[in-house]
Length: 175
Image 1 (cartoon, rainbow, N blue to C red):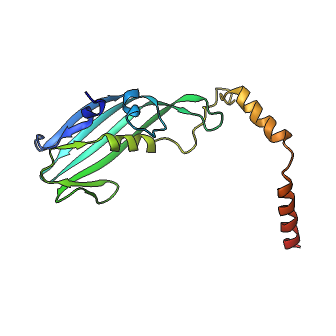
Image 2: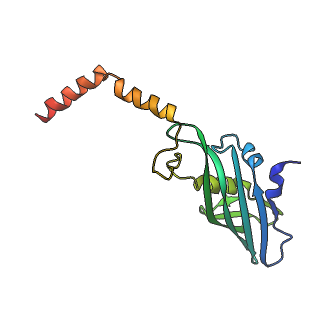
């Protein structure tokens, strides 16, 4: 059985009102997405679906931790994430996206797969800059050997002679 089938919601069988679902997302979820930055994680998802006559409102509330590579030293570390998102599913004549938050599906559609949206919401919750957190003393917890090698590369490298030519051109232009 495919792991992602648990994220297919039967929309026609739901009665009007509020419905709650809980999911535990683990490494298996991320394995189904070829280009995922995340390969390991443990995330709890609480999903509330409010069904009305011609639409459904999905409220995603998730939190947990993922293992991602550090942007500074590239060593993996655990990062706490969480978020709340809303998705509105309307019924219409064909599949299309009205906005980032509103999806339209054909009237006869029986099921709706939330896994691509969940994948997107989790990745969008990642911070722009992902580095190891500092310890209680304020020191980086990055791999010390990698950081030392990076510092040595920046200190000992001789300037590229092409930059000198460009600097002279810039200086002559400003003169």
